[in-house]
Length: 392
Image (cartoon, rainbow, N blue to C red):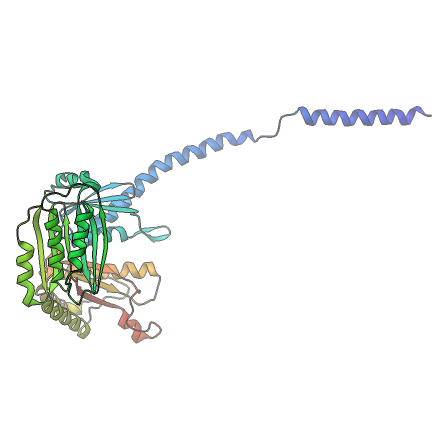
């Protein structure tokens, strides 16, 4: 019959319309069961963030405190905020302050991924009148002065004299550059100026203090002259015959600021002491138990001789630890540093002043021999002691 197909078509049409209606009117799928889990995850992240912040800050503080102990910088205290560290105190020399800042910045701490540097930023609040931890009155004044305080750091290294700092005005800057270039010794081949002007009236006596830095440093073979926190400091390596002249010129009273640390190193004495220390450690090596930072008991005599030689040397000494390339870089660096620290502690026990000796580990980065041969690896596993030169 003709009615059959028509009924079937009508049913099919109704079926399609019912399907479309159900598809258009229903709500989209959403996994509502995940809402409690999402809330738990967010709560865990929030709680962990606070804990992680304090945990990281604690690692930063412990690492910086360990660095202070390792370098013998008993004058320093810390202010830690997150991964930022402020070192507070009055260093014995400007270079000692710079070395401590560099050491804190480079210090590493163990993490689940290996050794890492936890400190992302380190600044110094140095100056006279510093009280104890948390009471750095002189340093607080120094920081408050900020970029409006004129200061400088002049460095003579090799044949280059570098002028860094902030000076009051263009006239002062030009006078300093002219003084550095006029009749300069032949050994100074280049004067590099990075001096900035801060656009203030020159304080009475500042130009004299700036020229003092240039005039004294020109007499040195290497060194640094610095004016910061109203204090002039000089570290100079010079031939012994000129030492008294440099000291007299550097120590004269200033109208602006005061004279601080004047450290004159006689070059002949430095070179003689360095040769003696090098010869001593080449003739009788300081050895350690395998894979350990414990000094071999048979090396007591060489430690006695080394301490005696170090005590007679001028300036600051750096104990340097080195390894071969066996093992990972992180492990080698840590082992070399711990061995250097062990030698430093042994020398202090034998009378070398803690403030005069620091420790550093270089891992396998500075080989003397071929690491592919056992003899070469043995040469690379060593301790060296160096006198910090005046421009370091």
